[in-house]
Image (cartoon, rainbow over all chains, first blue to last red; front, side, top):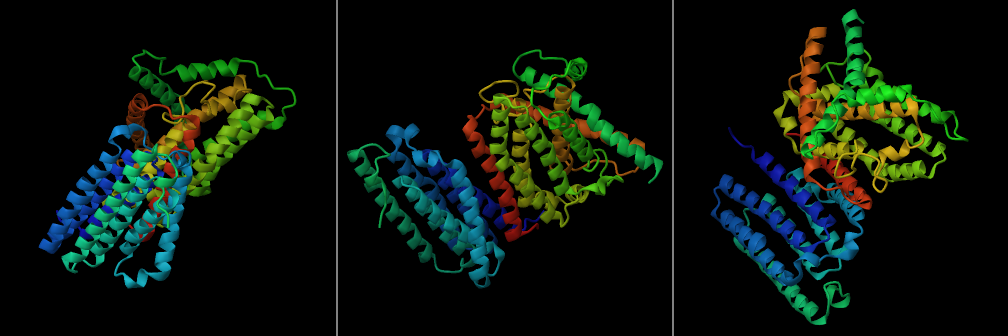
Length: 216
Length: 318
């Protein structure tokens, strides 16, 4: 039995999209971290599959990096930030608006797809290019609608996942350093998250307003 | 229209009418088993129905004729649905073209709305509470149903449920497509909500969480009996559409004979028993969500249905 590469890309793409919608409707931070780790794992699987079909060592290395850094190290670092009060770290505002967040995420998905079709679609060789674009907009939505620092970091990770996802689909012949730069970006954002988390420990509860928000 | 075709129409309607209480009885017994209870007999719904039909009908002061007519209008709607969707044949029976998939959804909506209006017409606080709750949740459930039908329509290029059944039975690519899997998940969640299953609703007259039963609080005697029968028919129809069109579309005998239809009834009942078993297991393992969280549950169902159409638009069916 042969496996069609298009089907694998479609299946993983749907999984990534479902994860993105799940992240939008979740208010607890610990499941959010696990969710984005799973999304990164899916991305790693896709990259691994593409590395296998393309017989590309570079892609295999990128797949390994994605799994190790995004699906393991970064979630571990983020989880450590909430280890003392894991059960109660949640965004209360989001908890009361699950329906709104879920429906909003679906609406944004459809709008993002229409925008993609009207503007960027001719630049991409296949319709699957809409999926990374939608994921990017979902990450932006999370950044815009959430106030908790760690959740915003997760939104940023989602955006970075979208960039790697797009690169995996359409630019996998590019040199490895492009992806390495992206990983460094992610590590930088994580450091910011850690610093702000330390501020949170000093200044008060996880829901305290000012130090929690990334502004500017 | 031949004699056999007419007989199959009658047989299909009779299957829904007569077996729906039995399915409800089996579901009740299965649920009791999962709770380590003996449970009522599987024919208890028939006994209940006989009891309701013997009782006196009481009508609240000020209620209009709609109060009396609503159970029968809803009954007619469900009876019509029972002869237009694939239940005991994989081919359209003569009256099937009366409505398409979307029309079937609208008939479900008609049955729901007359029940709702009758609840308001009763003039009771309890029935108004039930009507209010059911509308607030139907605002998400009805669009989900419509989106499910849209998704089915885009997969097959038609909104004929028989075509969907045949396509999904014949094509593993269509069956395993992300669009179909997502829409099946959305429809399953919707069924849980529409038939009052956990985690949405714990069946019975629990005042804090009741939805469906609250709407018929003021009905009694034969009117209440018809409402109960409507509920069983609705459950039977939704389960049948789910197993025959979405989840297990295979195996139906395509021979247009009474013997073939009879075999299909046996097969359908087997599929329905499997569904009842799965739901009993599910109900034994999940907790009821709080009332205001039901919207979140339905939002998930709606999101999956929209996503299924979106995925089709982006990726198509391989």
